[in-house]
Image (cartoon, rainbow, N blue to C red):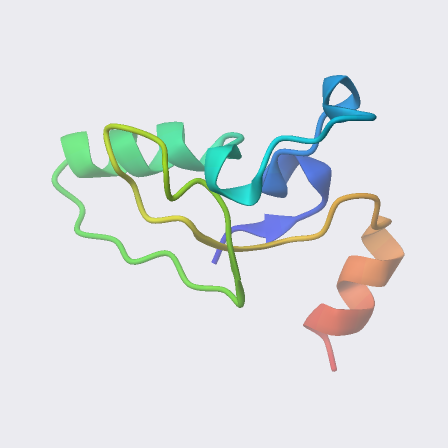
Length: 80
């Protein structure tokens, strides 16, 4: 499960005030997925959020990325 803050979801300063839609956000997740596939790992990202579904070539857009959250906030949802 890709878990993190804006780096995971792909929220950038350049997105404000006109933010890109969620289907165009990919962050490091697309590169990680492509590299895992190249290394012959069949992975399935999981998470309650989806971002990057319009990126080609396609990759698994599932994630748990929360832009603006602190590490303490992420820990709170991780360990409950």
